[in-house]
Image 1 (cartoon, rainbow, N blue to C red):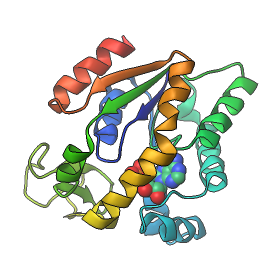
Image 2 (cartoon, rainbow, N blue to C red):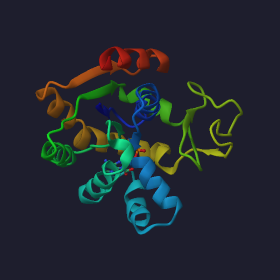
Image 3 (cartoon, rainbow, N blue to C red):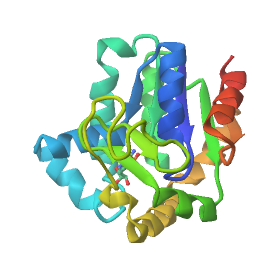
Image 4 (cartoon, rainbow, N blue to C red):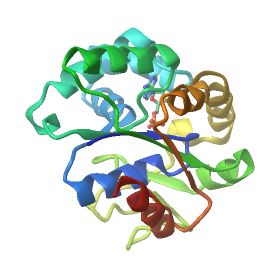
Length: 213
Ligand code: AMP
């Protein structure tokens, strides 16, 4: 099963993608997480990506497409994957389709998690991310068991630079201009399914499970 998660930054794509990955036994692939791991490890890719990410801009398509293609070649992708944060532009979606078509494959479902901008802005300020494993929390909606500490690996939680209010506004603009056109792209292919992302995360997941079967 190949699933794409769509939705504004902060709509809950990452949280839901992880739940899907666990429930369906497929890897969760987050381009944002891969970039953050590269930044942490001081790689060339990380250095290049950071200049865009810190401003809330998108990393250039060519860089992202190369990265995701090498990830797809790994063994655990044999039975599919859930993509979180990719594709984010029409050229990325076209590159994905072209690569899949070569092997007679296709994306099964694009799940759009709908959340109005007002909710996004108030949510993002409460978001916390683990500096070590990338797990994300929310101080109100999805708090860690111990304040400021990651449930998964016990490391410190922070407000990511790209979740700071001025960057969030820019990311929302970028989302509306560059990523939202993907909704029509997948609607035309008849694989778009929409869920109400303002609900409790478990209810959102129940709706997604009803779609994926
Ligand atoms: P995310 O964690 O998915 O919100 O991604 C954080 C940041 O990484 C984004 O704001 C972009 O700068 C960059 N990024 C992640 N995925 C992509 C992508 N598919 N295309 C371009 N930039 C991306």
